[in-house]
Image 1 (cartoon, rainbow, N blue to C red):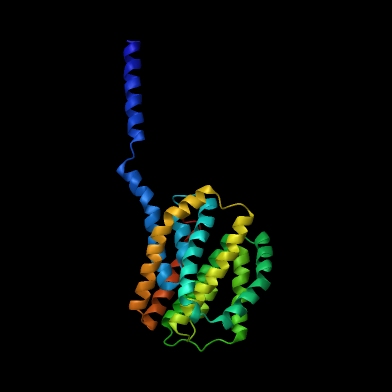
Image 2 (image 1 turned 45 degrees about the vertical axis):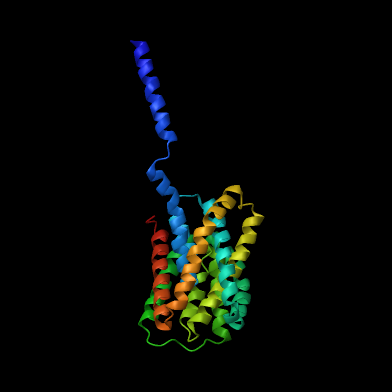
Length: 271
């Protein structure tokens, strides 16, 4: 009797091992889902000039560890930014962007110091609510404000540097700054692309310094490069053929407001 039970147990274990060894359809779909996320985020990045990182941080957190996601997104975003920057470099408003970068360098260390004493989630909630409020204001405005002077550019740079030092969330002030001005959409988009390209390069240097870019990150980067390139190309193509300045501003502001809502939900601990 014991022999029969053992025989049946051995057969069951053999069947189980065969089932586990066989990749099921659901597992295949689960492996394809991150590639689809990268493609969609790439389309949005190619069209609007921003949004890739936050979309990927939230969506890929269901598949990978944060220590893998951060350097992976930086590597992918730099690739995307480099191509878009090459295409739009002639349109970049370097005058205002230089002021923003120089001002950001002053307040970035201050933000890092505040990080030691202030909970990041509290600052995330405050920034998200501020961005939502400003987005609603921009959506209800009938006309864009005049091109801001050097003082406002420096103020935006200081705020962006401070928020980058505190919680690596310095992008929204710069996005709102360019979307709210009377600059053409093409110039605003090109300047935002240049801004994120430089910021990503600086962050990548930090990741290399701390040894966060390992073999797993490089393999995932190689796998995700194709859907990213396809998404960026499609987004850039859609921007060219469907360009309508007023509609683009509204779409970009609504996207930023949606990302701020997601950030707010993360800040209050909904996921």
